[in-house]
Image (cartoon, rainbow, N blue to C red; front, side):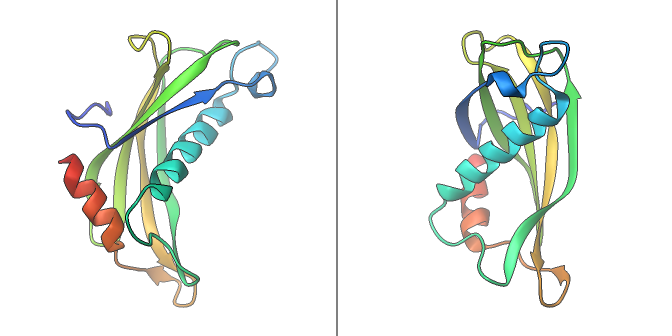
Length: 139
């Protein structure tokens, strides 16, 4: 699945750090997930209204990363998020990681499914209004 709907939900630039590299001198595959996590959290912090509280918070139910090419250092990456599906209790965010200097260089794409989860009931919880409103703008 390619994460490239017409309208991006959020973009952020992140610096690749030396400590992100593995023995082959390219970004370790686990770091891609950290870059995506950072982008999601930065996006959530921009929302107009609460997206979690002391009882309910989002959890990652699925993560798919299609690795297209290795990221070398030094590099800055641009992470773009897309709202692919808005459900009752879940959100599928498409993502793309590209070079900040040359956006035609795609390092990875895919999606993450986030489910809002109530820690007291151990069940899913309705998607917060702030998340729903933010995603409606992207469609």
